[in-house]
Image (cartoon, rainbow, N blue to C red):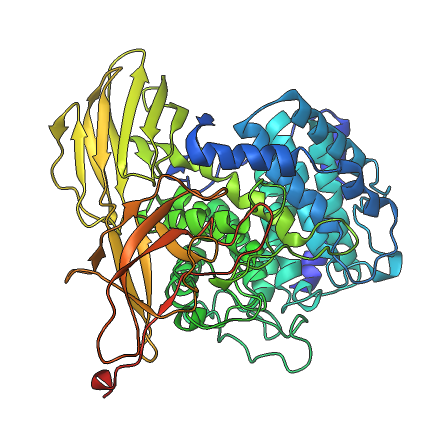
Length: 631
């Protein structure tokens, strides 16, 4: 098979460039499997989410020094580091940001970034920063992947043929190097080849945009190698816990032996999703869905992310404990992207529920107050601290990754489907889409969600049209009501989409009311820890908010159904989004119990996220051990 692949690569190596010289346009390939949902065409958000997007846009995306990102590609002496990923991570974030808010200043930065990168491409096609004798080692292919993803994002934005050609030359040279040296991609780089073979994603995208069958052959060869003894076995091990697929590394935790590396694993499955779209091979979809389910069931904590030391470790059951290097932001952003891919593909509620949980908690918590930086790790208790600089680049991998998760949110909040529209998330703003009848529709959301659970959705259409509008009813909302023009909609169920099939006219209004009562959840057996949740938002203690030490033992005074009265605090501390007070019973350690006390709580995204300090915080409420509860 390796000989066949080598022949495919070498025989057809110049086909695409020859077609370019003859002014033949690339042939786009229609996917064998169509996504159920399509992104909004334009979005403008207000409210808290809009503020967070604008902060990241101004202070992270626009503020980035593009020349510094390009510089490593002119100095090809690297042997082990990953400077070459930063250009692609920032660039793909910036393209998403530009699609959200198309301003000339950002467009110029995108143009300069692309032209600067392409200017570094060698005659043989290489865009990278590794020394000639170190090509394909360590993070070299990983970096090439991010360059191709960035170039393809720009091509999709502009249809500039020279940019597509540059991406093709990069891919062609990679295939040539691997083929001529008769190497296996799963033996290259780190993490059982997952870092290197995650190049599957741009290779599949190149096939879809050019029709060049060599890219499809290379993609299928990558997946074939996955299932060899040396490969990560991402398909055959889909029934195995992601934390237990391989023995723990004995020598280098971050080396080739590490088969549980969370970020790289999900990146490979994103590539497999693209290959499934092309080939419709059901075994790919089954492996992807089983793995996603296992990650959700065994790894994703209450704030919507996971990983320790950047690897899966069956962490869901350990989440109440202090955990080393917990919840890498690269993992958080990639979990959102992976889930968003499956939401696009299937339209299923569980993916939207998961994205919402992660977005409002783990993702926003990792973004600092002004959007200029992102935490490398985001614990559930302790301090939220900046990450260290990596590779002499003035930022780290998570600072580059955070906006990639953030800017997927606007275009997936309201999406179009073959039958009509689907409302996945709730955020104040205006969304422009195309209906099944090929007319433009503007969807206007008026809400301060999740501060409250009241959402108003209005449709603006030129002419009436019969279509299905699907509205997500979050799994956590115990009681929800839905109305159209004041008339109740029946059959509303938590954890499902409510479908409204009717003839819609301009000005028609949907009103959704969700259950925002505080909920007390219990985790663990000995010791027990409680946590308070309101809507999709985890609440936390914060040292700024109370004189009572956050390590004090307090019992939330919930009713028999587990609900707790949360009273809003309007005079909030600086940098706090939501603040409430609730009654707790302090443990006095005396025979006579103490009187209840009111204690303030804030949203997890704000906890410890102060403009000028790093206050301690804790979402967990440890409870006293009661011997009557022992078995």
